[in-house]
Length: 288
Image (cartoon, rainbow, N blue to C red; front, side, top):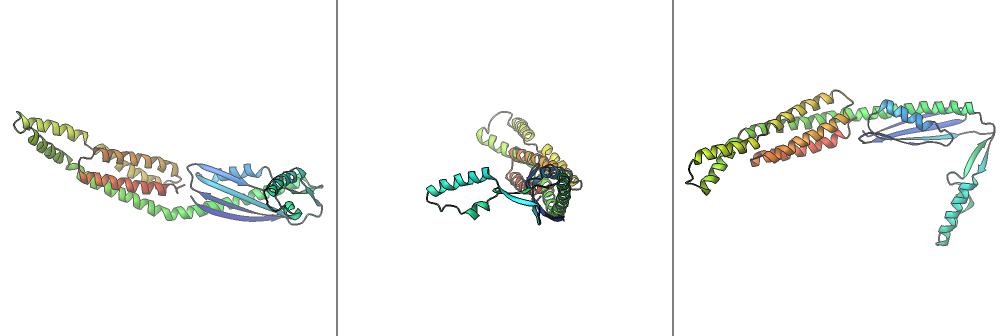
């Protein structure tokens, strides 16, 4: 879900630029940074992101500049300046260089532009146009994420194919578990009590009970169903959250398969299956 989008705009004596970035996230989370005086932009940006995206940590930054302001005047925000001076004096007591006047005036929030003839309707119109540019940046971000997704789809499909192959190998190996359990139990009972009456019947009953406990048919059936579900979801975006849940189900069945395994070969397949599922889970984090 990583991506980037940018758009620029201008109107009258205002110009602005918008950048939208995203990284992986289980849900949609928007972080907004905008210019002072445009209070509605954050709300509009959140609505725009929710209309286009399902998941990810999205950051939208807006920088706006007034290129000409003949009727505007600079004024000092004395409260902010006083706070900066207080911090600067504390640092100076510790041996730091005292701040210069131009350095203080350059700090964010110290200088404000006071526009005595500012028209609220004109400011609202500019805000509307900036919001449209935010839409454009988010459209570019969405297109960037879709390009990444198209490149990622064959990678995820490859992991699903590998899981299906391992499930087939596990089915073949699991079919031999009953004979392996019976042979192992028979050998052990013969060593411990070779002359016990009804030994053959006892071996058969105990081996059958152990084979029942070690039966992994149910787990393999569910793994096969999960493979089919994964392939269906890949063709029905957005499916990121559903795939997240499916990864949990994949891992649950693989863990049970390993715990029930009665042969070294089946255990090896189960461990490899868990490793592939974990690799698939990491890739699914990139899915919308």
